[in-house]
Length: 240
Image 1 (cartoon, rainbow, N blue to C red):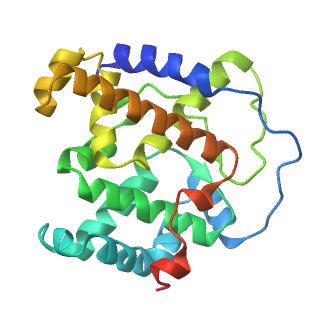
Image 2: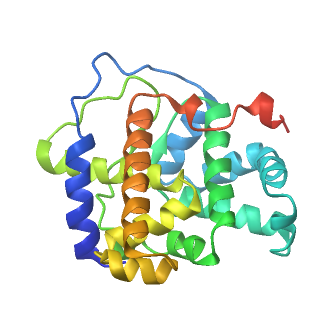
Image 3: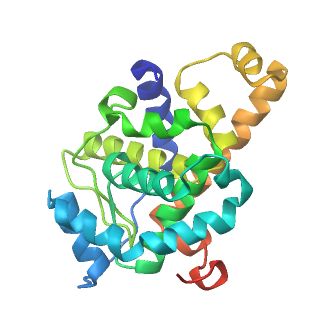
């Protein structure tokens, strides 16, 4: 992905969703999920293993129910699902939250989207974020409401964090929207995007507009702690 294209377009879109942060104290929670994610983000490799040992079976079951025959066509499904889940946690946007249900629902949904798309999306996620998207590596997204205010240097911190919100939100969108947005970040023209997508330039432009609207709406839901609207209800999805 072209760094210049992503940096410019993401910065402009980030400005649209970098609204006033929600007020209030961030909730203090001693839950196991929050503790393990915090330890993993601090460099404790054993914490990643503990998270996967605890929730991998549920994530596998959720992915199987969502993808069915499509998943069986990729080969060794258990290994493939675990590879995708590890990639999400190792190379995806950095986030912490205290709800186990929301954690595994979030990872499960991203894994489903990765497997619905081409292998290119998974391999891109596993490459260094610095090569794909020049994001601030210090940004950690807190998904529990209310969203804490960004501290200085204010402008650069806000821009780096907003790009992480955009990146996480894009992973939660359908693969078709992700493909359109990838072309947008690369500054691909409507005519060229249409050629790559196999549609007319006007259709490519409309698809881009709809994808950006869905991306923006997803960012706002994430920032407002409305994860329940974005990730599967684990009772409806089945509890493994």
